Amino acid sequence: MDCKTIAILGATGSIGTQALDLVRRHPDRFSAVCLTAQRSAGKLFELVREFRPLAAGLVEEPEEIPADLKFCQWFFGADCSVRVLEAIRPDAALCAITGIAGLDAVWTALDACKQVLLANKEALVTGGSLVTEKSKRLGVPLLPVDSEHSAIFQCLQAAGGNPVRSLILTASGGALRDWSKDAIERATVDEVLRHPTWRMGRKITTDCASMVNKGLEIIEAHHLFGLPPERIRAVIHPQSVIHSMVEFEDGAVLAQLGNPDMRGPIGYAMGYPERIPYGARPLDFAAIGQLTFAEPDLERFPALGYAAEALKAGPWATIVFNGANEAAVAAFLAGRIPFGAIPRLIRDALDSVPPRPIRSIADVYRADAEARACAESMIQK
Ligand SMILES: NC(=O)c1ccc[n+]([C@@H]2O[C@H](COP(=O)([O-])OP(=O)(O)OC[C@H]3O[C@@H](n4cnc5c(N)ncnc54)[C@H](OP(=O)(O)O)[C@@H]3O)[C@@H](O)[C@H]2O)c1
Image (cartoon, rainbow, N blue to C red; front, top):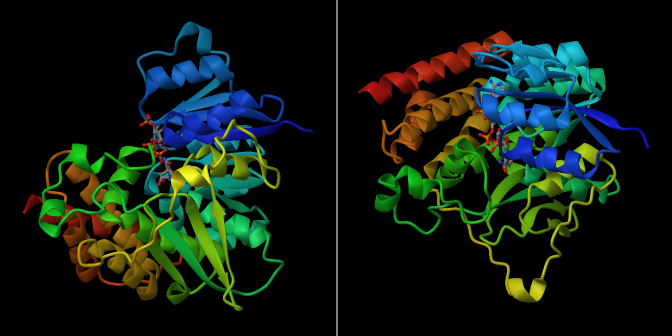
C-alpha cells in the first residue's frame, strides 16, 4: 500500500491533532508532509520535531526557528497554508483552519492535491458553488470530515444510487440545550464552552451553543450533497450516537452510529474508501439505554432559522450569515457582547447588507467584509 502524503492545515487545533494521532498510529499509510497553524509556535515546533514534514507554516512569524527544525521549508504570513500547498503538492489536504480564513487554502488545495478533506465548513458556506464547481471541474473530491456529513456520505455509499428524499442532521443541542431564553441571553464564556459530548475548538463550541453550527452544517450539506434546502433538516439528539441520517423515497432511513470521537470521520476521509482503525470503543447499546430526539426550538435558538432563510435567499446571504457570526463570536469570546447578541447581530447584518451577485472569490470576500463591518458597527453601539 502506498503511503499517502497529507497536508494538515490547522495542525495544532482539535481536528489537526486528532488527524495527527491517526498518522502516528499508521506511519505506513500516511505521511504528514505539511503542517500549518496560526500562532501556536511552541505546539507547532513539537509537531514538526515529531512528524518531520517537508514544509511548515505559521501565520504569525516567531522570533526564531529552533536550530533542529531548519530541515524543513518554513512559510510565514496569512497565506502560509496556500504557499505550503503550492510548494509541496501533497496527495491530500486536510483543511482544518477555523472560519473563512481557511477559504484560500481550500481553493488552492483543489489545484494542488488529489483530494480535499474538508473540516473547514465555513469555506464551503462562503465559497459555496464556486468551490463545489471547481471540485467537479478538476475531478478533485471534497471528502467531508464534519461528523454529520461523514455520516451522510457513509449512508450514501450504501444507497446504491437510489434517489434520496431528505437528509436529517442530528444535533447535540450544545451546552445550553435545556436553558431558558433569559438564561441563554446571559450565558458566560465558560458555560458556553462546556459542550456536553464533543471536545472542540472555541469557535465551533460557541456555534454549537447558539445552534449556528447546525445552520452552517445545513448549508454545507446543501453544497456537498446537492439537495434543496427544504429537504435538509435538523433534529436534536442529545446522546450524539446517531451522527446523521438519509431518508429514501420508500420511507426507509439509513443512519450511521458510533461513539462521539472525531477520529472516526477524520479517518474515514483520510483512508477513503477504507476504514482506519484507531482503537475506537465499541458502542455499548445496553449502557446507552435510549436514543432520544426532539425538534429544535427556534424561539430559543433563532440563528438556526436565520441560516435556513439565508440558504434560500442565495449565496450573498450565507456569506453574510457566516461573516456576521464570525465577528459576533469573536466579540463574545472577548467579553465585548452578551451571548444573546450573537443571533441579533446576524439578523441585523442579513437585513442591512444589500444582496449582490457572487461570481468570484473576490465577491465572497467583499460580502464577508460588508457583513463584518455591519456587525462591528452594531457591536460598538
Ligand atoms: N473540532 C471538531 O470536532 C470539529 C468537528 C467538525 C468540524 N470542525 C471544523 O473544523 C475546523 C477547525 O475546528 P477546530 O475545532 O479544530 O478548531 P481549533 O481547535 O480552534 O483549531 C484551529 C486550527 O487552525 C489554525 N488556524 C487558525 N487560523 C489559521 C490560519 N489563518 N492559517 C493557518 N492556520 C490557522 C489554528 O492555529 P493556532 O493553534 O495557532 O491558533 C489551529 O491549528 C472548523 O471549521 C470547525 O468548524 C471541527
